Image (cartoon, rainbow, N blue to C red; front, side):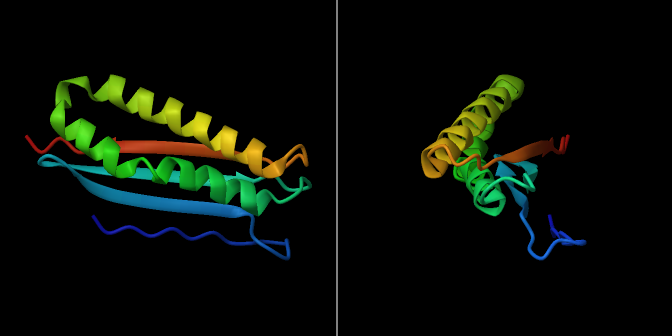
Length: 117
C-alpha cells in the first residue's frame, strides 16, 4: 500500500507535527497504521514530544503485525492492547525526557485492516 504524510507549518517558524503511515501484512491481510502527533504549541519542545509519541507506537508495529497474523480472530483485543501499551510508553518517554518541563503532544492513531476475503 503506497502512503505519504505531509504536514504544512502554517504561520509557525518550525513544525512540531509528526505524521506516519506504516503499512504491512498480518498474515495475508494488508494492514495500515496512520498516526499524527501534534506537538503542543506554547509548551516546551513540542516537536520532541510528538516524535517520542510517534516513535513509541511505531516501535511496536512489527510485533502488532505478527500478533494479528497469528490470531486474526482476536484482532480487536490485540489492537486495543497495542494502543494502550503504545500510548502508555509514549507518556512514559515524554515524562522521562521532559523531566517536568511541560512538553506535550496530542496523538491520534487509526488502524486499518483490509479484509481480503
